[in-house]
Every structure is written in structure tokens, then in C-alpha cells.
Image (tube, rainbow over all chains, first blue to last red; front, side, top):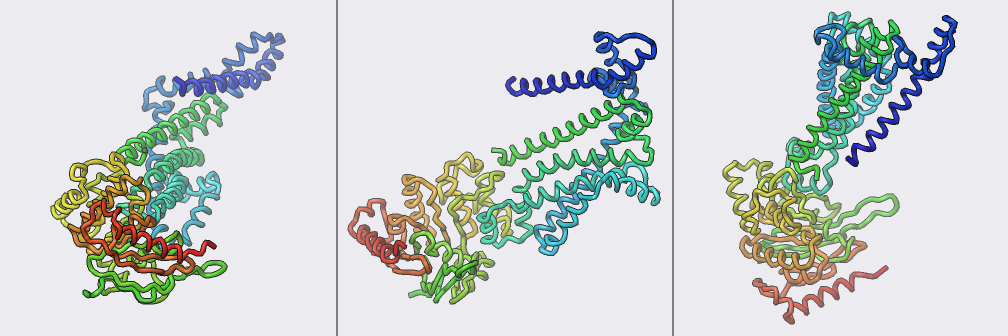
Length: 287
Length: 259
């Protein structure tokens, strides 16, 4: 209870502020309409009507919730208007990109820790790759893949991997170097090969670092996938839902898709957190 | 006299630093015979740990010659000539005690049945026979250190190098472990190099006490212990013990300029 109460208080404050903002931002439209009809707007009417506009500047929380519910439960999940269907498509590309990115990050980290030339050369390029604005690169990636006849999941997964390999790389380099001098000396006293050191010491010790960076990476992969769904008039995925919402001024649809993406991200991060807790407890590292 | 297991002639080790080079060891000469229990004692910075690490091939001397079993220390390390015990047990929390002791055996490629047999034997040797299936956090600090000694013994190296293995333990536990270590030494006949900064510990355990002093790290006295090999705890009240401890203290004082 002591943990739930602060969270609920903050949530309540946010929702209250949101309602205030919705009234403020949608008021102009309501006043406009009233003026056109030659009517005067009372405070009560203002309050009532700013909550129920079809295309509000800022939809009220309950409108977004209704939109989300309608998108999730109000459709067949195979419908193109179903958020479950769009979310499923985004999830597939996110997981594929996350797997590619995490694997690439881990392999590069192992290389960096064991090879001086890789240590000196790879990091600057990895950092440079992250300073490129992904929003600018994404359309080019989609176009290049499309010209090679590859569309659908793979180009989006590539962008997701682009964003998600970096936190894994940084976390794993730190994690693989985490064993202290005494542990390394013990391994040397046994004349262990670097492969044995990696397997028995570096990898187990790096796991807490790995899980921390996987949480960042999976969220980044979702962002990458949605960015990959924005260009070229994509018709599938939460990103496409965002895009079509903004084409037609469907603000409720945009917010519903945004929240669907946020819920998806939270679920993915929570899943990794769960795997982290189970693994680290089993290994005696969480104590 | 049998040929020495460890032989040092004018061993020096100089670390280059930004201002003046640091002489961690200067002209250290020492012979350690088979079955000797040699303690290195001295204030911090006297090079006792550095010398032990040189023997283990974990540091390389910059001058002089040092042989272990007639080989260079690095060759001896590759031949797995010694077991090394650090001040901290360094057990892996994700392995049981038996699993931890089996780790060097796995790395060295011992077969599974051979590993099981050896783990059981060294666990008995350090009197942890019941605790093979426990995890390190379930054991006290003294028991964990005993497990780390068992790990160093498991692959039957003739030399045991110990760097302040009981330094982090309280005196009561330390007394018990000293007694157990002597029993283990008597049973296995290993050559032991032991770094400590406790005078009673050095005198109680050793056949040979090497007194060292800092800046530069060097040997100021080598004392062959007059005590018999059989040593009950009460021996520490004997005249020979007190006299030897006195000589160690004198050696430490002479080497220490308090600057």
C-alpha cells in the first residue's frame, strides 16, 4: 500500500492536469461554434462540450481510454481498425529487431573486450551510428530495402536493431570487464584460456549489466519499429495508425495508438525485468 | 640439502611512475626447500605480496633470476605448479561450494568422476565434508576461506601460495584456521608461501620466517624457526616461541625508519 499510494497520487494529479488542459485547449473551438450559432457559452456548457468533441485538439483522458478500448476490444482482432492487430505487427518487428540488435551488441562487446584493435576501432563508430537522426535515416532504409524487393518486417527490424544494439554493446563491454583483479588473477593462476574466462567468469558477472541494457534496448527497438512504420505510407503497425490518425485529424486515434505503444513498451520492459529477477535470484547475484 | 623448490637470486622489481620509479623489490635472494612453510612478514609496501605474485608468475621481475620447480615462474604457472589463496575467498555465488572447488578442475580438463573424487577429498581435508551442496552465502567467512583453500588444493599442486588468507577474519577464527592449516600441511607435505602481517601467526606457522622492509622492498632477516614441526596452540607460550617472536619484532623495527 505504501508503494501504491504515491504512484496513484501522481497519476491522479496527471489526470487532473490533463482534464484542465483539455478544457483550455478545446475551449476555442467550442466558443467558435457557439459564436457562429449566435449563442453564449456558459461555464457549464464549456466544460461539457470540451469533453466530447469528435476531433479535439487534446482529447480528454476518458476519450482516449474509450478509443483504446474500442480499438482493442471493439473490433475483431483481424480488423484493420484493431489496435491488437496493429500492435501485433509492431511487436513482431520489434522483437526481431531487438534479437538482432542484442545479438550484435553482445558479439561486438565480446570482440571489444578480447581484441585490442576492435577495442580501439569499434566504439567511435558505434557512437557515431547513434548520433545520426533515426527519423532521417529510416525512410532511406525502407527505400533501399524496398528496391531490393524486401518489404514488411525486415526493414523495420533493421531500424529497431540499429537503435537497440548500442545500449547492449555499452552495457556488455562494462559487464564483461566487471570481474575484479583478484578474480582475473585466480583464472590466470589456473592458466585458464580467454574462452574459459569468458564462459566461467566474464559472462556470468556481466548478466546484471546485460539485463539493465536489455530493458533500454527493447524500448528503443519499439521506438525504432514505429519510426520505421511512419514513412512511405505504411498501412500496418502502430506507427501506421499514428500516421493515418494525423492525416485525418483523428486525435483520439493518435492518442489511443500512442498509449497502445506505451503499454506494449511497459509490458516488454516488465517481461525482461521478470527474467532478470528470476535469473539473478537463481545465480545468487541479487543478494 | 635437497634442491630448492623456489629459488630467487637478486630479484628486483621496479614500477615506473610519473615522478620517480618505485622499487617494489630490490635484490631479494631466497631459497625455499620442499615441504618448507615460509612466512613473509613486514609492513605494507615491503613487497611481500609482490614477491609472492612474482613466484606465481602474476608479476614479472625486472631484474635477477627466479625459478619455481626449476622453471621460470610463467612456465610453472602454465604447468599449474601452485595453488593460490587470496585474502578474500572469491567464491562464485552461482556455484555451490563443491561447484566452486570443481571450477579449476573443469578448466584444467579433469574428467567428471575424477573431479567428484577430488572435490570430496579436499572438502574432507578442510573439514567441510557436509557443505559441498551449500552456496557460499550460506557459510561463515572462515568456512568460505577454508573452501577457497580446498579449491587451491584440489588439483594437487605441490606449492601453496597464500596472500594474507586469514587477514579479514577475527582472531578466534584465525587461531582455529592456523591450527587446521598446520594439520593440513603435515598431512600433505606441501611447500607453502604465506604472506602475513601478524607476528604470532608467522611464528606459529612457519619453518622459515622472512622479515621484509619497505622503500626499497627487501629482506632484512631470514629466521629458521627453532620450533618442532608438531605445534599445539600452547606452543605459543613457550620460551622458544617468545624468543623467535622477539627476533621478528627486532627485525621489523630495524627495517622500519618511521619516515
